[in-house]
Image (cartoon, rainbow, N blue to C red; front, side):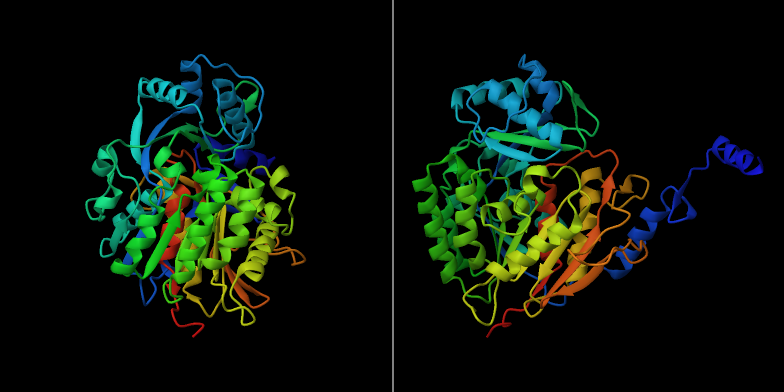
Length: 476
């Protein structure tokens, strides 16, 4: 009776307490402890990247509430079907519903140019349309320019008048990047718990569609590689290959063959990071895995991209992409990262393979796996990426424990067969070794009321890269 009265008293005076690991703590004590640990443990590398080349996809993002736009277009809830390409308003509704129900970010090309323009017109006439920098390359470049002002950064990608206004003035846009009219991508966002028909969104994320000739045909790819010789960057970041998915298999293979031949020419002392994005064509993804992944130094991807890559290339847990919902299991993700590093990564037996780093990011945690001879400062890199995720999603200047929450599993395995363990919030960055590779994991403090989800993965990858140190002569 005394205990019951005490609990009632605590609630009545508004003091929020929760039970965590058999002890009473204040509501944001865990979050504050993690933030404090990050502040103490995250450090910049001794040798930082100073001269970057980023390409090749860039555009203007038109961001609107997804459900509101569908209602504006007189589209009502219906079936949920995953279409690889969108030819009609029905395709838009069905594919949006499919990923809305799963709570997974996705991107699909629109095939009908006139219909897409009508959809964009409807989006522009909503109450509060927002225009932002879009495209993985432009987003990565703008994040680095914003957070690391001493870095010299050149962007090769299609840049129209509106995008030129939006990009940071410090980014160098060569003349080869200029186009007369901006490419527009439509970002249909939704919030956690939002309803669409009988579905309720399990997380806050977005669905993206576009009709984009410049990026979908990779028109800047030749200029991008030509630019390397004169500019001589110390880090190259490549993205946008997913937009080729709307093209024929012959066109796709031709572009990949060109990219492969150009990547081989780049000295191993200059790391190349490849940022992947959502794709559904198994043959195309397998072609990327077989022909490109081993030719880059670093790979960035989320749970959908990682699990589908394993499916397409006959990796471990190859059917997991079909059943994954919400937070992916840590040991499964670690298994796949290890497989990627072993299958496509540098080894003494095959020094022609360049891959030495994989950066995985999802809503609730990140993992970076590395070849220890090629990269330093890995724990700081994963910690900086997770810390930045909450800051950007909440759209604030610095971490705020009241705005974020820990959604990390109470019990987990670091890899299959490992003992079960729990998170120590005073040491949130976990490290381990497996078969000669080093891994670092950190939980994300998830924003309770996210204001900006677009570009989150790109921001995470950019931050992780800038906190990483590449050992340029590791295999010499």
